[in-house]
Image: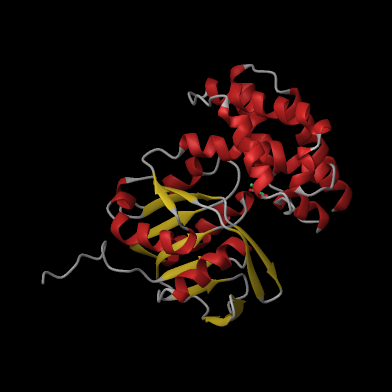
Length: 298
Ligand code: KPL
């Protein structure tokens, strides 16, 4: 049998951070037999209780060949910059975070032979100390962002299918990023401002606020060349219903006095709207309210 090329062999994965989605991906990869290590701020090995097993992860040691980077939008550029000296010449990096506006800064940091991917997911997970619960069965959309990534599809796609599948592989991630942006721009700030679970937004009083936020995102997306049809509102309501018992990431950030991703979500909508002279009073208002809440609790 002909030896398979590196782009076809299973990769050893490094997962950055100890967030819930990264931990879920790490556990599922490990359970399927992948070599997985964790890259944490303080390098150390880590044990996670998941689905009745204790999974042990060594601290990541360079060089890194395949890296999943599910860190917050405001931390992703620094995370990639700190990894750069430790990447192999054909390393594959998979980003996954809420919000937009980071990819254009990250692509130029990599060598042409290093692959960049983006994965957006609706899986839900909850991490408490060392135990991890898979709280919402979701799905993911994955896209290769450069030529060096496309060549590694045979190795990266099955790994992401294992980690956060089912995965749909798409050529252009942009419309999916706008759809997730609309979902987050509607749900996250409202749940943070009203300090409620996602499901509370199904109450009638929130309907005009959701509609206004979504319509504004649709207008800005259209100006950026992405047409989002009327099913968007329905999609947002479906996500609210599917995650009704969850607290959004932004509600949790405010409740735990952490920085939020508001700049990459409603902030991005406001910034893009300004480029085209589009008024987005609802997104502006939610941006201002969440920034006020963050400064009050910092
Ligand atoms: O992505 C989310 C988040 O909380 O950041 C949603 C989809 C709103 C689920 O809570």
